[in-house]
Length: 479
Image (cartoon, rainbow, N blue to C red; front, side, top):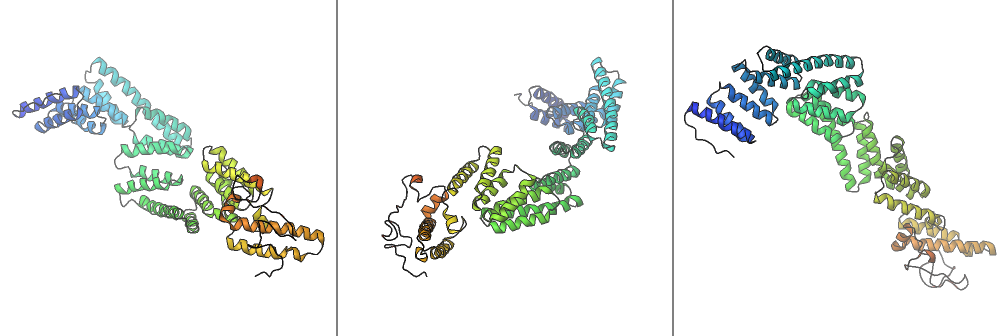
């Protein structure tokens, strides 16, 4: 580090600041160097070298916007300072201010420059002329609707005029027309930074994000527009729409977190009403409604199918429809959805577990299905199960049949009904069955709960009583 000097007198102070700033600049201590050049300018506002040195620091710091006024001040104070004019011309060229840049390069060539300066000025002047032609051509291609060719010309322009806001905004428009929204966003973000009050760029960014279905980023960008101009009509109108939609989606997600699925589904239905013209929102809303209605099999399958019709590989919709298919006992369809989802999300544990469950239930359904025996859905409550059991037990009670063959058939049916009731009203046994294990089948047991059945109708059941307690007896009255 360079030790600070004691300043004595105005002229000596300015020179000392310049000298100290120069040493600090050479040492790479830009902030300290800048401070000394500030002091030099304060001490002598007409010292062109102080302005030039400060511009040099700004350029080293990447602050070209701050450097440009200092270079202009240098040229004002010393018009024949060729290096300053050449640097200003280069900055103007990078900003796309081509006419101004050309004037600087031409004046450099007329001011008895060094060989190096003359060569650079001639090269930059030729480059500026070429860019002028490409600007005209690119605008003509945009006007004729040839956005691909226009974008190609603008690529070449921006390679040189990297800070040209107009060219970036025009290229962004080409990308929008070409459907390359990511590239358009990149150009508009650059344009919003290059121009401090660029409400146009923020508004376009917000509308692009909105149409892409990213309501949160849309809200962020439109708020930036309103910070610059609270009365901006387009931004304010758009802000109200985005804010309303954003609030509805956030509220719906909060309801899902609270497991208030019916309310969440209705909230997402209001999302579709708020924005019916942007497919991304109705698509997202239907996907989330599908999730909310997973317990309502028919509606869930219908809504999920609508989502998958336009987006066949939507993993969330595939998982939700598979769950609905499971509840509706359409196991083969559930397996297909889980396999499709797995193909597009290999490491999803929920898909793996769901597929295994569906495969177990399919295998189980091909044997004995206690839900089908009682004629109830898989999500039936205990009250429904008991009611179905009583009705079927009354219908298939062996005492109702006289023919030996019919009685034998009724006996088997009656045992199945009684077993189904026992399994489905016992939480532990029902859970095992729902996971693909038959608690009444010795072959499927892994050391868990199991009942043995022996004996006939005359001797009663040993170890199992369909009606709860005591020896089995058919002479009873149903309640």
